Length: 253
Image (tube, rainbow, N blue to C red; front, side):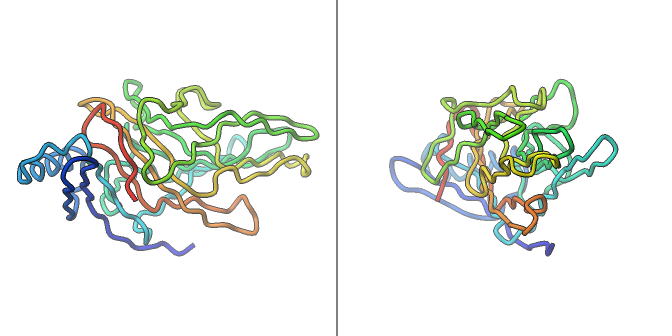
């Protein structure tokens, strides 16, 4: 698949009071982004931090979100984490408390939970909190041989708020990792059971912990189809977060 190219930008927008905004190249890290927010707010003579969101544009695909995948006990592949606080050019490929992965679990004989997942990730440090994702209502898939209950993402839109009132998933099928299912693949011996695209494209709400507290974020995904559903892809076209801890985020247009 062709790897796309893109540029990143920093969008600062006040949601109330006098309209105020500025844009420029982000320096890439959460501390630097927060400092830019504070400096811009001081220059404007306004306290806009609580209504500001840092946004990174990946519309041309500078960052390629390679999936992690698993098939059987000895066949797997390591993908690339997406850090929601870092621009496309500065992604390190290392997990962090603000990282997500795209995970593919291929169906197997007598397995009923294959599919695609968006998952919170981390560096593997036991002390590090993983991101949590905003889940929709449980979805029961009724198949002729295997039934399964899955949790798809809440589909959000520009103007929606990401905050404490969401259903933050912390008990999915992967233990300590927060995961939402976007595609369901039934096992190989049950070809007539549901194989469904549950969330091909849209915006997903995220929250994560940094040293200064809880932050709210979003990631917008596009969909690259394939004749064989197993080889379709999610592409992150943009992502963003509120650099001010414990403050909701309004998804920008």
